[in-house]
Length: 407
Image (tube, rainbow, N blue to C red; front, side, top):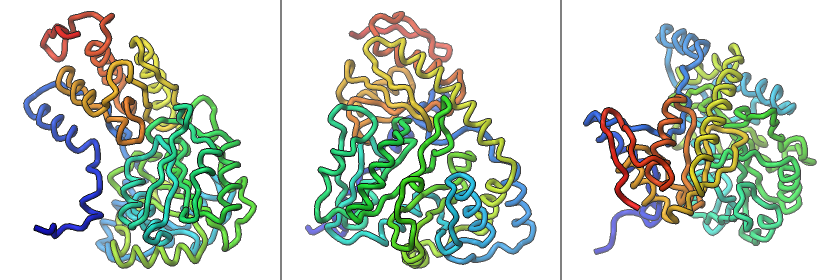
């Protein structure tokens, strides 16, 4: 019997954390001491400026539809943010506010992609990029660095370009690896996309969560064409920098013609972002900014602890992240099947991790260090107990003493 579901919808991969989260949730309900190292959101509280701005809007009892592309106050805040952080002055017509950076990305893909078009995505990549491209009946082209590293190589990207290529997407600082791409690469990919007439999509959602004095290079710095013909698009939002993942407010900055089409896409799908949540974003962007530095400092300290603990596990290779709150250690010495390894760690040690396979890096695990130091240290120690034959055979998980009785 012919399926009544679309081929595209059926081809989409299930988000990798869903089943693991479901398992973890059931274990937690039973009172099991589960440690979640797969989280994608900082644990700190929402900035008070955001809460007060949202509360003021709520108490006005005037929570109505807004302009499709965002309220003027938020667009003004995004314009100021762009000028302060990128040295780039844009107009309100260059800004689209969406219900999260993911919604901005989807509106962008829907605006620029035709069936058969290709989008170049470097591995490791955020899991949603290929699936969102597929939803637009286009083709994701994955470029995996030959050297196995976490930074793409310009030559490999150029070799992947065909007559069908429409865009290249770059995410630096990178989810899942925490890599911050070099100035030489950013300069090179800007030049390449301008020369080939391709859209360059910069997913900058983590751009201020960087460590060791690193400053992520801005694509605007190297663009020769910043006119209305520019195909440079920058995506950002409040989710990560302000720990406002549940507020679902993001934005895109691009040429006015593209923003107008993206706005039409948004008008016919989600209509407009929430008026209440847009005001919260205004509060975050225009309020006290020391919050970001406090979060960044905490994450840098957490990163140092996680890397130190991982380096104590024999045969695990870890590249020290320069940003975000993720790392992507290589566990291939223990298993080349990252999904099976995740299940093993959850079953034997009650630790939630995310399989690297979903990010284009099989044999790796994505581990998050945005939780507490206690969770990070105990979580990695449990992983070590499961995998490393040189670790003590006994461990306490909760109030139970467990013995490693496998090889």
